Image 1 (cartoon, rainbow, N blue to C red):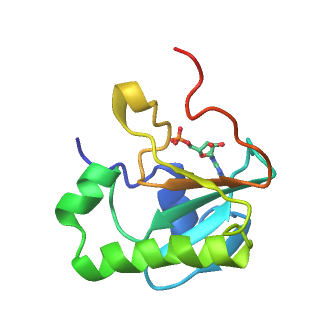
Image 2 (image 1 turned 180 degrees about the horizontal axis):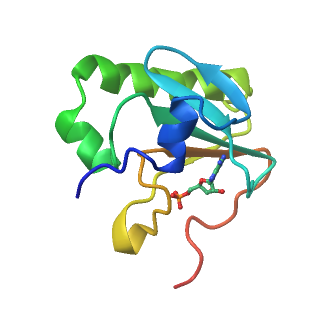
Length: 120
Ligand code: AMP
């Protein structure tokens, strides 16, 4: 599958459309999800053209993989999520139900998050 350069997160990265940004560095951008499912619901996206975790691991430089992971850690720290806990999630493909085709990690926190997955 080819990367869609006009997906909404690519446009946010290019600053063509606004986002409620909470953190940015050379590797990643983090912003509030527009439709939050928890009191804290932040998306972290890598800088570059990556569709999914799978794609990211196959093509991103080791430096970017580390930098992106550390950006997630930075946001967890900034929102003080270590003590009460959090959930990281990344959707992909038909079974995962990914909507936006730019790799992103959801950070959820701020309440009891319940069962890992809804009943199928
Ligand atoms: P996924 O199903 O993992 O692809 O999730 C995509 C997420 O992106 C959803 O939680 C949406 O609410 C969120 N989203 C879509 N458009 C925007 C936007 N412009 N700004 C912030 N979050 C967005």
